[in-house]
Image (cartoon, rainbow, N blue to C red; front, side):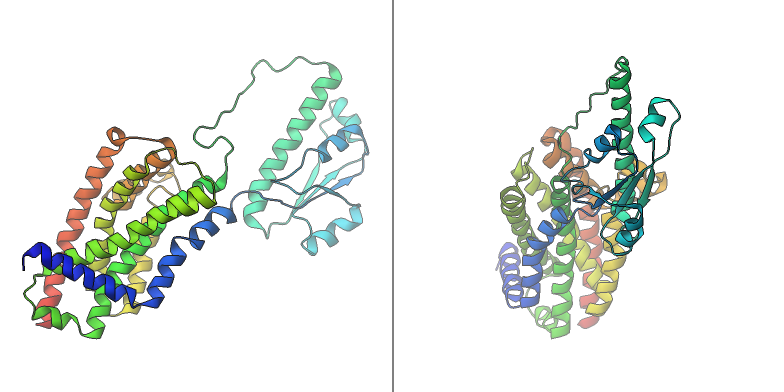
Length: 374
């Protein structure tokens, strides 16, 4: 048999082995369906139907205007409560925010006395409390300023800031969350599948069978890379076309084919990384611990969760050696901004170069492991 045939048949063997592992099949199905849908719709960092109550001790047109400024989908319709009901409602978790408008609020505003409005926040709901406090402050200030200008007949401010958000005009969280989840899941699942495949063979004793066959370590590694990479690539394509575009109705600006080509290059790096971790770990629990130490930095420092510009210079420099940094930048450029190959080709080159380094290191470790078993 020629070497390409060896690589092909060993890869088919890997696919059959994966097909007989129901746990892995369930993990793959969940990763590219419910996990992406949940990440896109949960929106932990944005306001969604936050419960608001208002204590209106002024009863003026201005206080009524403030009450009418809160509406879905960010806030529920405000509930008017008395001062005595404030603590009980927050203790019971009925309200995340309670706005207390003091007596004579409108009169003091028009007289230029700068009265204070009390905002009570349930800080146990951390994400909504942090985001909502700033939103409520902006809403109240905007309504008060507009009311004063109309009442006094003041001229419009000399500068009118027209905000236009590119690529996501409505600032919809699911547009960003769903695509980023695909990027994260591609990295995670490819490392898991490739590493688990090697450890599974070692635990079942089938590695010894490979040693007596006319195959080389590089052929065995390439078979694991293309077979497990193919599974993840098909899952990513299904998630992008069916879950993101079909179910979530997220518009894709760029070329799906170009993104999948980027995924294929990235899978060469991450599957090699998974095999490298599997040669270091002696068992599946050790492999899981190494996964935690490796995956968290790759996902959190690659620019997907936090912009790289806000990271320390040392971290940004070190993360240039990670394939996820270049993959995330290329994927965002393609999917969000519709970039073509003329824009993202430097990322492609970096991913291939890093992948070759990981592949060669993993191959050296794999040969050493096979030598110890021989």
